[in-house]
Length: 150
Image 1 (spheres, rainbow, N blue to C red):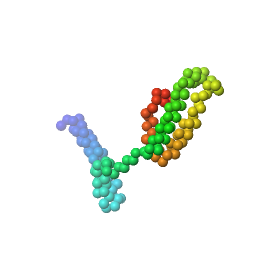
Image 2 (cartoon, helix red, strand yellow; image 1 turned 90 degrees about the vertical axis):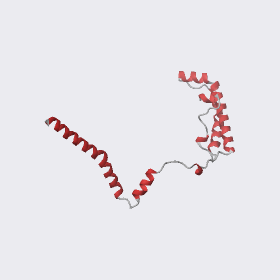
Image 3 (spheres, rainbow, N blue to C red; image 1 turned 180 degrees about the vertical axis):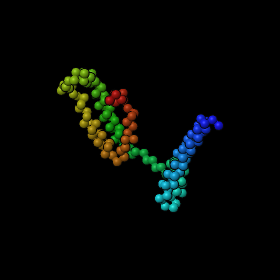
Image 4 (cartoon, helix red, strand yellow; image 1 turned 45 degrees about the vertical axis):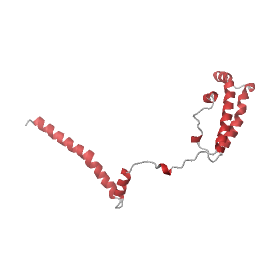
């Protein structure tokens, strides 16, 4: 047999043995080391856990809709938000002009800021409600075109 072919066969055999050691023997040794320090039934308990399907039993879910008071507080907040958005959109040219010039807001053009207290009061009433959750707010659904821009 040619010595080059013989050395290539030996090299291929060593590579196969190394691959078997790395990908088959090593993980099983690590797993046996892991489970050797555990109590007697831990391996069976782990196998039962690892092979059980993950899911939610629909009968155990308890879905409760927000109460009417929360919906009313949410409606008041969004009405205040929309009113403020309408005021701000009416003054949008003034705001853009001030922004481009890096100027201060003139006192006679600050009327759109007056509705802020109404929003704060509505927000405090909404967040103080026991059923308050951000998921129930539907903040990604704007209720007016002006509110969609703010």
